[in-house]
Image (cartoon, rainbow, N blue to C red):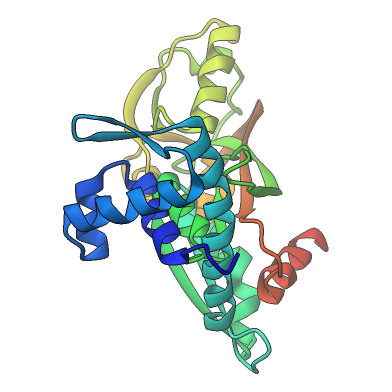
Length: 293
């Protein structure tokens, strides 16, 4: 172990992650020739090639993939250490860094995090983005927990912990109306609806429900972002397909009305964390509060 040059290993790790020598050299502030020489020294020390070179592209050998697994563990643990220090473990104030996918209901996120507002020992940072972007931030321990309406599957490189938080019925919601209640599925045929975007799991469930019911609806709008879907539901005059939590304020104030729940169609909510040797107390307390409800 004393003879293993961890700087060389870090250079290899960066190149393997970027998949390109030039990009890695720019990030590491090295010349491409110097970086290539460092990788060759590591290969000489280990006694086997780490990459197959094809023009300007680099591909890991089977041995290189094995070394990368160890490098991920080594440098991932280092990133976790720094994240633990930045998170304030052992200090009076803890820093909880939360990511929320852009398609998640802002109301759901606020409801979940509201108990933290009265805890002066916790400083909260909230970031929004795509699931792919936020998972990368979680992987390198720049986030402590990720809130999502889509689950993720763990693998050997990314041992995610995906905890179900809630399941809420997807409903038909629109302007206040009087008269008889909607009859499903008959009354939906030909109705103009505001729907979640095609990438939404709730949308996929709704489309399948329509297919099984043999009805065809007219799509007035498709909206990926839940904050925008809330505005469309409130202002368009059309009927929206969404969970009640998205428009909880409008329902409470009587600006919108819940007509009915769509049988078997749900929005699921998850908390995703990365494996850590020491879990974040703030995250554990947050999830414990959800489980206790």
